[in-house]
Length: 281
Image 1 (cartoon, rainbow, N blue to C red):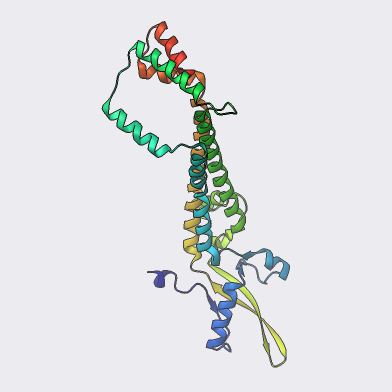
Image 2 (cartoon, rainbow, N blue to C red):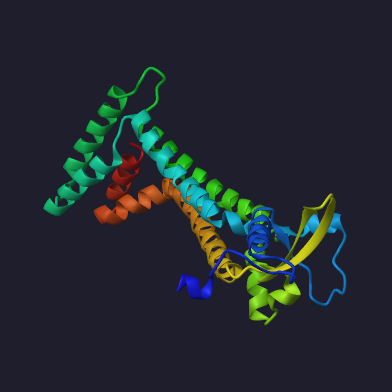
């Protein structure tokens, strides 16, 4: 399938005097040194400075780009595991223990709630370190830091793709609009399938300059791949930003009291006051 739809990385149209060895050399050189796009409606090739600005510098690096993006997205996980070791708590063990207790089921009477509240307040004072910090507060900070780092990583990855692809900011939106409006790559110049390459050959004491027309069939797949990847990053960014605000709202006093009251099914004023007292712990 790859041979049928992609074939070689690059294929160039050679002059008649080029032999097999010359053809291999020219295509290898063009693959390494980048190619540039010129609209077919232009009668002449642009000047050298303009050609350099139009060079496509991404197609030979696509596998490495994807590897780097995948590794960068794993950074928040590394940070989260490291922060757990710093604060001295393993969330996996804690959540596993809570699930086991939740399956058994339990009920709490009003006296039990007051007793449990006093125990938690005593434990909180006992477990304070020299600086007066409680590990629960540090856990909250670690969670918030991890979420913020995740969002920053996603935004930086989007910026990296915009810069490296050389298509300007929000290239995914631009290319998507071009596709929906029926604007082909021949007009837009994004992910072009036909490009040009310049190189020199020294023959018998003088240098010949050649400009070859090449086909980048892999760009047909790169276009779909990076559009899908860009939109996936947009979804991740939106969900991450929403999750940060949702996380912060969860630690407001109003939400804590509402959450505890809903679990304990508080109806009277005394029960609501106990829920407020419990939330302060």
